[in-house]
Image (cartoon, rainbow, N blue to C red):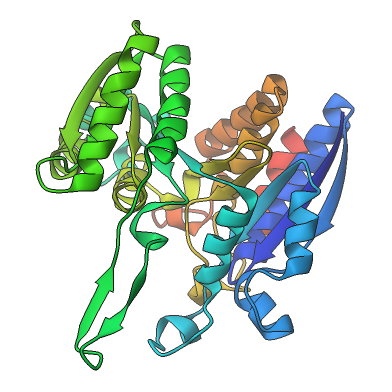
Length: 351
């Protein structure tokens, strides 16, 4: 298979972890007789520095003409520490999601047997956890009208959803649940928010189309609590943009490191695959960043193309590395650690 992949390294440790994902993907392509055409493009603070905006038109053209996007991370402290900044790296990410129609963020959370004791939660609470969040990505409060009034003394952010936006995300949730344990949880705040009531009534109306799926409805605060009490009681969860943003970061630490969790953002035509961690600017250039989340995101990319053996080969290599202690310092617990490049080299060689 010939694949055209847009490569958006971004900021901070993004270029370093992306390099390792490319290295591993190229090893997969060689092993399984594929051809990958990598198409680099600018985004985030790097794009602002180069052309003045975080998601340039040229980058969008490259992404839109590709089969998928492999993405690193964006963000820089000089923007984080400047509330008055008019242009920010994160604006590029929101613009990219909107222009590419990436409405469904797929965020798995799973555990590794060799790392159970590195989780902040007790082993008996997390063993067997294997859940997936589907977070709506192009609506809600992040995209609603926002501003200031009363001479700047009052700020507002509007949360708006249409039924169609809920339906298309819920459809993906039901379909995913059918491939797993046929359990779906709709996360909302329907006792307070009108948008949540729209979410709940829309999902309820769709239940009859998927009679085999057992659907539950839980308030977001209850889910936040249960994620640290009984995470393995969940399977597929669907939710709106802001709730999903918060809950998926909470869920990500169950595995023991944010540096291990991949994600995908899917639309009708194209998918974007990225690690869930940020740009981690303090580690830039130090060769200490964990590349495994980005590499596992590449595995999700292959699987999204229907290349299940290729995805499994990456996952098996990552598990072998973890079992053998071929890990960066975030997972070494004071023992021997390996650099970002060394981990990537080991994985590529063992594929």
